[in-house]
Length: 210
Image (tube, rainbow, N blue to C red; front, side):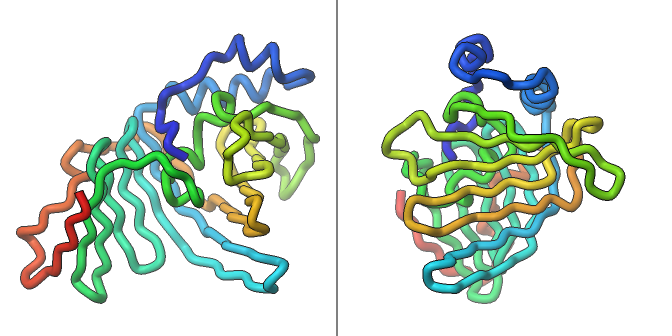
């Protein structure tokens, strides 16, 4: 997902993506305009071939190309160039620099919520009403032949223009399903939030891969 906010040419995508409703472009514009995002979500990793499914609860704070992700007992800090992956139970942090190789949505969590147009061709599927909410469903097909995904499905609220469901279908048969329970924009997000201070963790083991 390391787009990360090299954000898109809407006119070019419009030429490639037919019958896309205005609501989608409204959604896309909103995702581009917000200064920060805070979301609570569940992530299900599913492999039907192996009959395996695992669901974890997570929270993410995004600002520009920076993020703080908390999931699966980990805290992942990214300040735009350096990533710290901290495991509290082991008191261990792994430090690396930004790569670009994508294996799952967690490789660039910020891309879960934005930049669909620059990486995918867009297709409108339907509008449905669920619990008094009108949801717009879109499918996306990767432009890059080496993408790890076959397709991505997105559902967002037509009124609030907030994402509620995203499903990445991987070429290896693994699906990553994101259900968003809370979504806030333009929340306070000081730059220091996205760096990890090793000095605050006594006895921490540091694995530096830079």
